[in-house]
Image (cartoon, rainbow over all chains, first blue to last red; front, side):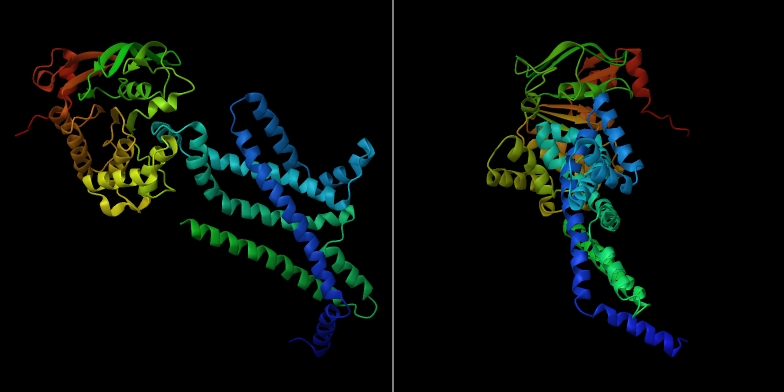
Length: 232
Length: 247
């Protein structure tokens, strides 16, 4: 059983959330997180589809370049990429990006690589006789791609890309290292601000942040399920 | 002039000769059945005619026009050649009607309403009038092949190629597909059929070509080939389909 002291500590902790503008500030932080993720995801989807199509080309040079790019994006921790974009670009080329711009740049580069690989896999999973029956009814290669290959590839892609988008949303918590004030950072500020009066506030703040992340990703998975159902 | 002329064509894959210096012609309204052991080049021959494979030598003419090894406008040539494959190759994300309409409407730019009407007529002819809005996964193999045949027919092809269309079907579904093909033959469609259904071949063919190792070993009327094959290879092939009773 929880002692009455613990219970009062928890109640006190949660009361911090509603002091002043704390909750609104957290929501504001969540919006920064979602906004960075959303913009990066939109760019990644568009560029990823193009990158995925390029990856299916037979030219060995193009293939090698794509492979190197994909591997670099996968091997490098996102944090290192963020530092490169934020500090590295300034040092090397004098290009000074804001924290948010650097974050969107990095997440787009990473998302494009991962999305591209998903698109490549989806495109290559379409059996060759689908191309051939398209040819047999006199469609041009472009028409085959638009009407036969792409619709089927995209269908298989939705659950996989939802997984990627969720990962991207969670990874945005790193942007705090390049000076972007997002939801986790604001949570920390609230905890610090109340450290003396309510030492236990961290439990409530992180609890709410947990639910915020959960809620955003949950909406996404609902959306994915809805799209998948509609396709059937 | 023959509708389709195959002139001295040769085809090889990585140095393996698949078709060697083959020639024959198909008249309008003629039904030719191509027989032969597996690996004899029958399927490759059909794929070369439809431009799915290039050839190394010779040429293929349709209506006197060279159609082999065309690059840019091959899709226009293919609109004149209907082809049905062994694998059920409908587009799984479209219903039956959309599968049929795709070629005529998108490739040939024909009027959608007009093609729909034609598609419905064909579907009822092949006994599938209630399947217009069904998706391929809801159909049996035999039904899918009948849809694939209708899909090819709605392009108004000058010649139809059938590549072992019943080979992947359950035995009880073979008949419904062959019946459709038989009716097309009776209506005077020009057809080139690769099959292993010997009694069907005999009944439907005007002419039989027997292929082995990429060459035409024998050609003639069905009764000439089936009753009195003139070559040992032909006889040997036919023996595969005969069993001696053990009683």
